[in-house]
Amino acid sequence: MSSDSQRASVETHIQRLTDVLGAAISSRAVETVQLSTSGLVGRLAAETLTAPIPLPGFDNSQMDGFAVRIHDITPDDAGRAALPLAGAVAAGSDHAELPPGAAMAVMTGAPIPEGADLVIPVEKTTAGSFDHMELPEEPEPEAPHHRKHRFFGYKAPLLMSTELYQTEPAESPLETGTSVEFLGLIPADLEPGRFIRRAGSDIAVGDTLLEQGMVLTPARLGVLAACGVTEVTLVTRTKVLVLSTGDEVRTPGSVLRPGQLYDANSSLIAATLETFGCAVETARVGTDDPSWFMENLEALVALHHPHVIVTAGGISKGAYEVVRQALGSRGVEFGSVAQQPGGPQGWGLIHVESPAREDPPLAVVALPGNPVSCAVSLETLVRPALAAVGSVCPPQRRVKVRVDEQLSSPAGLRQFRRVRFTAEDVVETVGGPSSHLLGSLAQADALLEILEDDTELAPGTVREAILLTGRKAHG
Ligand SMILES: Nc1nc2c(c(=O)[nH]1)N[C@H]1C(S)=C(S)[C@@H](COP(=O)(O)OP(=O)(O)OC[C@H]3O[C@@H](n4cnc5c(N)ncnc54)[C@H](O)[C@@H]3O)O[C@H]1N2
Ligand code: MOO
Image (cartoon, rainbow, N blue to C red):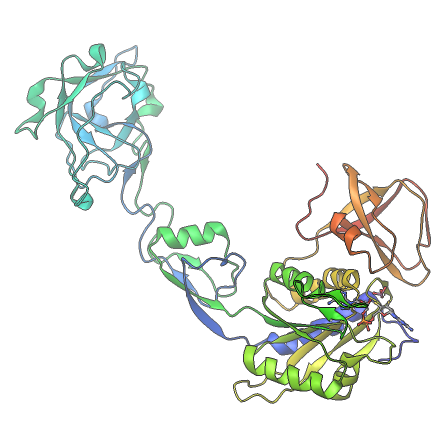
């Protein structure tokens, strides 16, 4: 259907866009990227990836405290027990062994000394903390991986003086006679494995880190890095070429002649599509000549290899509607959607000759030129369609709001008024319904949805609103 006398519903148009976008981006290529690349959040994994190492990578202490063997500790009725101190193990230290009948100081993240089966936090000693203890020297910086645990002793008694001094590795560290005095121990403190983070207890070797089609999140990127993964294979983002048209439109920074205006649509559309997970290139095709427009388009397709072309402007009823004239004869349909702003719309699939490009065909989404019409169309039509084709596009964010003013809306059109929050769940309109009011859009938090048969809204009416990109609901 391409007649303006019959307006398509919003839902019908979303389905049309879903069909054309689906046909164009169903078989996307994959690419391998370094994990250190920025902007990976929201990208789609193309392959299953399993853990090459466990997490934690080794048994380590969850607390700053003392590693002990359970059977070496027999608390008295007051929960007190003492053990000779055999040394200290810092995070980053290598293998240590716990001598029988002794305790070893262990710091959070330090490897558990062999033989220990639980850790008692330093708070459960009479010293209470390591704050006033002199800890063993740090290892040489050039060989951190050879970091050794240090045997040390206390100027006795540890828990009276809380003064700790380092000794050279001792033949028998227990000769120092220094002891650690635990107190307030209850049975739960002596459970096997207490405060030991076991190797592989979070992730085991071979566990699935990513599955094909999974969205990358900050946490998933963190897990990949923790497992030492350096690169990841991702679905190539939907590549969109944004073409803003209009002889009167100039690039910001250039000098305007009378009747000319700066190009708002390239920035607005590109920024929006980036939040939809697309890789976007923009170009301005400032011609009203359909054949020159097509030559430009073909050259740009050969350069950028997009999956989708989004045009802005040149589609309504004027004498110089270059997009409509150029693409209307190539399979792109143009018609009206029963919404305001964003009534005139174009959609379709085209084949553009390009040596580097193979099927599937290119999707065309032709938006009306008014900037607010573009913004609303992207939110109400393009976002749901992109989200429906299994892309990474986040869905609309809808909230219920109360409108504390009298509003009217034309019958048969779904009107989207720009509103801002004045209190939690309460909105006021910003500017009128016209689609040139870009300043008002920039002040708005949401698009108030007024349905087709909802022609008069009394103050206090509750309706749905779509939160605009980058805006959050009040409160
Ligand atoms: N006789 C009719 N006239 C119009 C109708 C209609 O049904 N019958 N529909 C109106 C509606 S609604 C809209 S929306 C616009 C859509 O027109 P076009 O898509 O052809 O867009 P243009 O005419 O090219 O531009 C419209 C408006 O937007 C300005 N513009 C264009 N590009 C940019 C840009 N990149 N940055 C900033 N502003 C831009 C342009 O100068 C125009 O003012 O048609 C109505 N007319
Ligand atoms: O349908 Mo238009 O987008 O209102 O100005």
